[in-house]
Image (tube, rainbow, N blue to C red; front, top):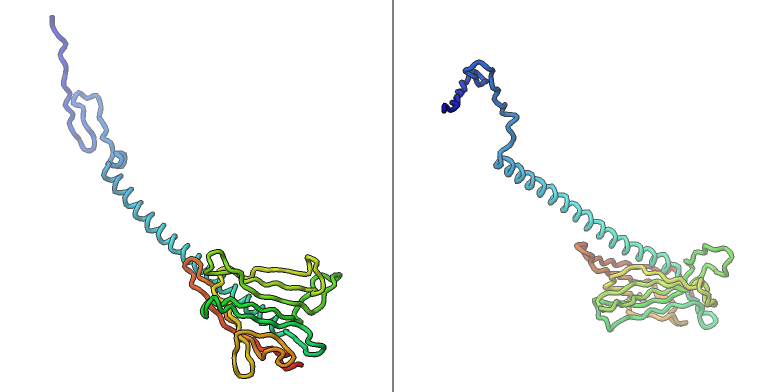
Length: 243
């Protein structure tokens, strides 16, 4: 029984083609551009991409941190400026008259228990700086204002509270307005100029009236990477010589 013999075809290269010696045609070799990437090339490309993405993310994260820190520092400074500007406006219009046993109020107490560097003082006074926004309410240009610090549970900082009584003779809810001026207050220190000396407390009386000036120091704790803020200003009281 004769078996079928297998023929062997030898491919002969000719230029860019493989030649079939039997004359049945040419076999085209795959171009290099169509052969794909090797595993090593893929791993190297992924590694380079990871390095580039890490650098880009690091730069973006740093820019976000800088922006956040700048915004926090600006907000802290803005709060201090708002507090001092408002105090300047309201203290400049403070009044107290000695006739009829004294008209008005100006009482400043010092929180000596908190320490010299962490003072949280309190001041209550009458001022002409009140602004009326509702026409039909029984208000005048005179109001009583109080600034005080309410300590946080940890005791390290507190909230600076401003309370205004637009009508000292009324107990209506609209007559008293309370605002939180700032949080994280580390210091609210007040001193009063009596002659040539500064004192830590003051109460307007017929013989002394108002102080010539008030020194206000406000300190706020740092937030995040934003540094702490501390601002000192001196407010002159134009009506200090009025009796």
